[in-house]
Image 1: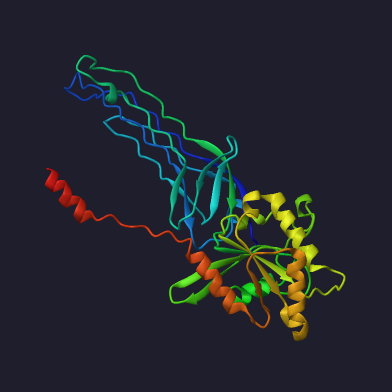
Image 2: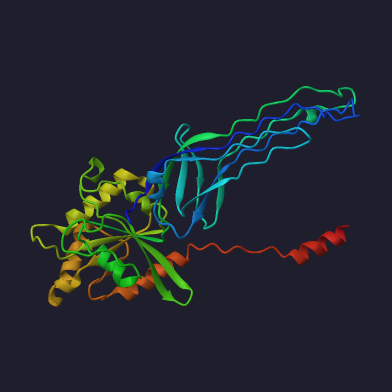
Length: 356
């Protein structure tokens, strides 16, 4: 399935049905009075987060979503039927923005979260609604209220705890394959990854975190080089970034330090808040470096890169050094979890009774 993380759609809620102006006319009842009912409510448009979806491809081709209008009121005290609402199922992590006002309507963070994005119009009043003791034969009626119509932009930002950042062919796909259940495409040429991949890393019973792998960045991505910045939005919800560096590039003239600095500069150009996120350095492909040269090469890289944060030396292919990295990530992610304390309902009830 093609990965689509942006779409533009039109949503139109239904109009309310018109009210009816009618009078009861039966034999032997000369003054039957008004009996025109109200119109029915128009259908609304809702969005709901669906954990089983991971792309917006359904909205790339189905661009208009329109609810039905409410029924008009009728005589004999008959109210019009309300129209059914329509529900648009979207991936969890979708941001819904009104294109006209550029305001964010909703962010679907939780599975099953339901948000109203276009309200249906209320039904109009029939003349039965206007009957009073002094106005026994009203002829007033009102039309139904129009439903909302909006042009929306849908933007998917995947929900992940950890994001992988690095040059093409740095070994990010190999790493996510080694530590999680994800199976992305792996090959010996650049830009093998063309869309984000998610993987769940199991640390232990009821202990896990989610890793996101995005296509590689190159210098000049802010000007559109490579795949540009179009996938960096998927790292904005993460709590930790892993900067994966190829310590043994195929081309001996390529300097890993210069490539690593270029990635950081592109990150800063894109979003300062993303640049300020906690970032760890992961030196990959140690299996391609002779054992007697590994320590010197790592020390030289850290010295020239002037890095003072956490450093992990791994080989994603042989999984050497991956377990310490996994446990360190989980401890970092777990420290962000918010523990909600439930109020003591029994104590509050007892205190209320004593005050009474």
